[in-house]
Length: 266
Ligand SMILES: Cc1cc2nc3c(=O)[nH]c(=O)nc-3n(C[C@H](O)[C@H](O)[C@H](O)COP(=O)(O)O)c2cc1C
Image (cartoon, rainbow, N blue to C red; front, top):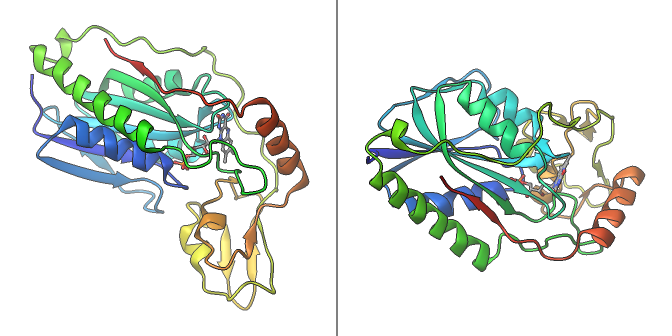
């Protein structure tokens, strides 16, 4: 079984998921690759992936689940018994039920999961002062992602059709664990460093930031994804929330030992 082209569907506020998915796609070696970046606020745009194509889904893990914004936006992506590769990216703590949730989600939308992987990305809350999985994915992770793509291509190449691929089993519990608890915590803006350039607002996947003659943040809309803190060119946008800082110190203490990517092939 061969595929015409690869469609990469990602939600990736701090771009680690995007980088892993791009490496997997490179390994798949398809002639044409289409990027559907759900991070951008294009809510309402429907995407259909043909049966002859291959989809690669890449999402960050939030509280052991697929990031809720990704779940919402992925519902608009439909397949037609289209084979799909699933990739969950987590910040070196755990991915828990995220792959199971992703498998269920895409299966309900007309995709057939044929392979999956959990990769590690720098934790969204990681800073120079309190780093966690800093610099990941690194060159070794990206090599593994390319090799994973190559392996998937070989497995699909040996199968007559998608029905010929052995059913994929991924770890995770059903019902899934409880996801992120809603709070009004959000990054803040240090006005003496802020130039009102608006890059934080442009980067926010959920439109929680407004820049007029000061920067306003809707804490209840904010998902703490940290796209804004990474996008700020002057270091004015910082996540100083006391609860998040406590969590980050705990994570750095308990989960700093390097974890390795896990691959699930039929
Ligand atoms: C709200 C929130 C919850 C998170 N929960 C987890 C988690 O449960 N386990 C984990 O290892 N990493 C967790 N992370 C870290 C992200 O999964 C990780 O940084 C990922 O690489 C981000 O992907 P992105 O760069 O594509 O945005 C969380 C991050 C955020 C913002």
